[in-house]
Length: 343
Image (tube, rainbow, N blue to C red; front, side, top):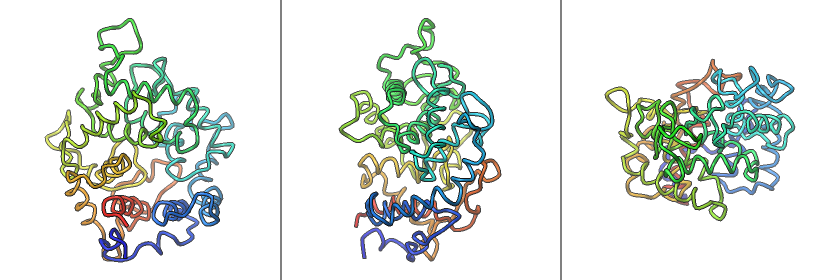
């Protein structure tokens, strides 16, 4: 038995690998990420075909306008979680084929309509509403959907990286340039955000590093490498099991950190923090030990994890049942345990 599987109370792999017309992507990701089946192999190719034929992806695409957007034209942030930006993020989460004509149209639409004049993704396509959570989510999704080489995406990632380190970004009071911080959005370096009382936002940090982690090491620019270094130090500066990162409102860290869910919107949970740090090579850092133990403690007798947080009722589709064992959360947890303990 492998080291990571020895940490389980039961064996959830047969459950994750079974054909499932409701959540077909779980099988695809489990084959690839837990069993190392090649992308070009018959099993993964068959699983990918199922993703486009049944379950959430066809249902999402059925609500898309011919022009490529959802709900209404424009930047696509509102309404949550049915508009264009969220569908691009969801389609990537759910393993959609980026070459599919409708998925391709959605990516092109968001690249053409959600970027501000400073190059970054914004909730309303203006420089003042660039925020790391949206930018990181969209960049990660577009990479997963095959757009890494697009100059517009590269420009967006360069802007996000520079806002983290402060390199070439003017202070908010220097109003003569859009390439500055804004008190209404990203207000300073290291994920400072108006939504978090202008303090560094760890949710934004997780989402930004999620995107950067998907760029192959040899493709990372100096700006991205510097942002990864600064962001990693920030996320590791606190115990993720406690998640007492700076917060602008309330007397304690948000409970969302400790409720594992799928998909994730602008918030992050402890599990995603670990996923991102593992992807950047820190899975066995001693500072993550308590957080990994927290993940382990949430499994049931069958080695499954519950869906504790959901956007069901707000999306075009529903994903699993809140409070019930979740294939998606179990998949996420197993990825983390495999990275932490090895084979």
